Amino acid sequence: MKNIESVYFNEIGFSSLNNLLQEKKYSKIFILADENTNRCCLPLFLPELATEIPIEVIEIEAGEEFKNIETCTQVWYALSELGADRKSLIINLGGGVVTDLGGFVASTYMRGVDFVNVPTTLLAMVDASVGGKTGVDLGTLKNQIGVINNPLLVIINSRFLATLPAEQLRSGMAEMFKHGLIQSESYWNKMLNLSDLTLNDLDDLIYESVLIKNRVVKQDPTEKGLRKTLNFGHTLGHAIESYCLQNAERQTLLHGEAIAIGMVLAVFLSVEKLDFPEEKCVEIKDILGQYFEKQYFTENEIEQIISLMKFDKKNSHGNINFVLLEDIAKPKLDCLIENELIYRAFNYYMQ
Image 1 (cartoon, rainbow, N blue to C red):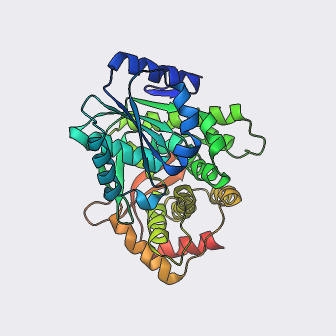
Image 2 (cartoon, helix red, strand yellow):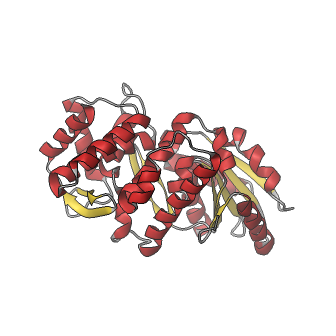
C-alpha cells in the first residue's frame, strides 16, 4: 500500500512520526486524548514512540457535546501550565472530536504550533483527520468556529479499530459510502458487499477513501468549489445531528448516522430536481438502511430541522445550497430546494 502525501498507513506511519521527532527536536510532546482513547488507544500508541523528548498527556471528556470553545480553553490552560512553547508538538490521538478540536487548539496556541493527527475511529481516518479542517461547534451548531490548517502528518493504523464499538465503525462507513457516491461508482460498488470483509480488505477501502478525499481537497483546499462536494448529505445531515443533540427527548445520533439520513434525503431530492436514476435512489436507500437504523420525525421536528439549515456554512446570500447528484460520481453544487420538497424527502426516507 502506497502512502498519500503526509498521510501514512500502518507501521510506516509510526516510523514516519519517529523520523519527524528526530528531525524537528521538539521541546515537549503533548498527546491530546479523550477518556476513551486515553484508556484504549494510548497503551497501543506510546510503545511506538522512540524518543527521549518529555511527553505529557492531556485528557478531555469524550463526546460531541464537549467539542466547544470551553474545552479548548481548558486545553490551552493545560498547555500553558505544563510549559508548552512554540517548539512543542501536539499529537491528537482520537476520533473526529479530538482531531478537529486538537488541530484548532494547536493552530491557535501561541499563534500556531506543529500538530500530528492519529485518528483512532474509522470516521476520523477517512474524513475528519484529512483535509486540514479544524474547529469546534458553537452551541449545537456544527463546526461554526475553526480554521483550515494541515497537520504535519496523519497516521492511519487499523489496529486502533479493534477498540471501537460496532456503531462507531458504522458511523465511519457513512463517509466511505459518500466518497463513492460523489466520486467513484466502482468504489460505491465495492462498498455494497461488506459481509465477507477481511482486515486487508478494510485497509484497502480506507486507503481508497482517503485517496478520494485527498484528491478533492488538494484541488480545492479552501472550499471554493469542488471541495463542497464532500458536503453531500451534510446540509440536512448536520441539521438533523444538531437537532438531536439539543433535544433531550431525542436520542443523540452519531455523525455518520445523521449523514446517512442526509444522503437518503439528498438522493431523493436529486431524483426530483436532477433526474437522478430512481432505481439507484432505491438501491442507496436500501443499502444504507441495512447499516443505519431508521429514525422517525414529526412534521414539527422537520420544521425545526429545516430552520437549523440556515446555519450551514455552504449557504450564501440567504440561500440554502445543497449538493445533489445527477448520477453516481456526478455531483452538482449550489442546488436550491423548496421546503415542500424537503418534507416529501423525509416522507420518502421514513417509508
